[in-house]
Image (cartoon, rainbow, N blue to C red; front, side):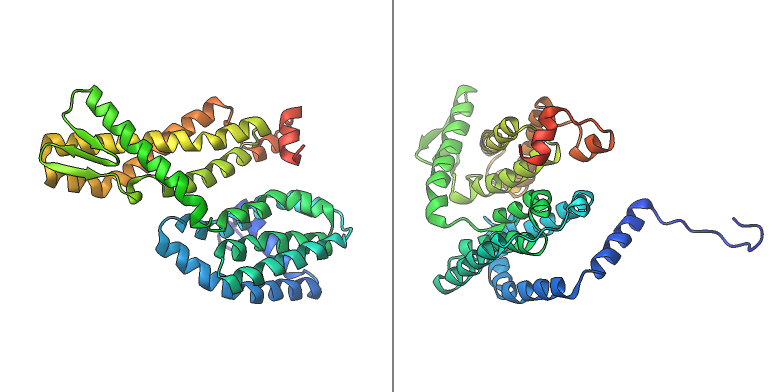
Length: 317
């Protein structure tokens, strides 16, 4: 409180001032950069209007809606590195822009949504190279490559592992409950228990959660600057973690259906997905902690703790 004026001085939080400064800096970008941004937006508005509703309605690809905002957020977190990049426009960027536009048009006319969304990555990469150069691309590389995760993988590629995981979930849960002494008969993906039959359908396979969990694992390993081998291992562990959580979920439903009847089973089934998500996160975060996910790359930078393995992870070496 100031005695002279009697008015309280309001001090904005540091993150808020930092955000306002970044927005002001973006507003001072040259006209030609804004023209490129507006052209890219105009090019991809039809793609977003087609792909985003499909992702939301499909259930399998709904996580993809969050990927572009996450990519923008990662660029914001990398703003200090982006500011340090020296301008040296690289003509090779025009090749990547042309390739991306060709992918986008091909995907649009063939109705291949994977190509439509995947084309965004070479277009953005090409713009960064052509307008500013390789230093900026190196700093923005991971956030831009993350955009590939928003591309809905074609169903012919998804179906075989989906069927495999569906079968493993049925076999694993039935095996656990039989070992515990519960009376049941499994035929394929159908499990018969006293009074009712459980069908481990495609929606119960856990595959759609696995895709989202895979994306989370990629982002999680990068955020904590794991060395590449451990980062890859952590990403691959998304499969057994998600599968284990889904097997426990189905085993739990078998228990409830056997002990408390069909009505209790249906009530539990409504909330089982929340249990799987929570259990998967607990298992994955536990594994990540064991593998060295304890300090973020940004905390390491601030503390100037950058050993050789972290340096390699930060710069892709």
